[in-house]
Length: 183
Image (cartoon, rainbow, N blue to C red):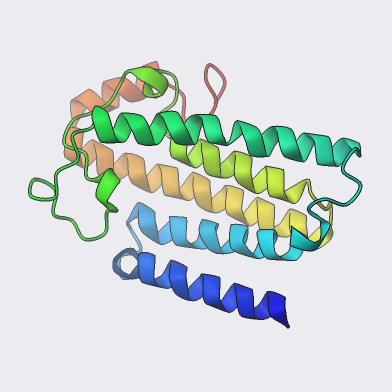
């Protein structure tokens, strides 16, 4: 019962954060909401197993992924804030979160290697949480989260192409989506 209440409360918070994008199915925030929902469900069903059998191979993989998710998150947010020049007046789009309202294309730092460090972080988080308890429900939720994060990245790239044009198109040729040098 507590897990259901936590899921409902978490979902309400995610709906509030995603209210504007949920009205625009072509926005990256629309798909991101569903990725967040899948991850919320995954976290809630796996919380009871978080520290069980903590030296098992799957728990070790989980902790490695959970710690690794901090790297692209920290470097990605920092770059958006310092190099992206977020500006609400120049990019008043209500579908964007404050740090997403960048006015300058970032192609240095972590963005030199991957276009979507924040989504990479969420992928690592989702898979890290999945490895806490390997279940059929868990694999379904982590695969849904992965698919929705891929859709989020594709929608975000379409938005970036509209905002930054040919510069972004050239940047896409030089960088990978989620994993440096690979994908």
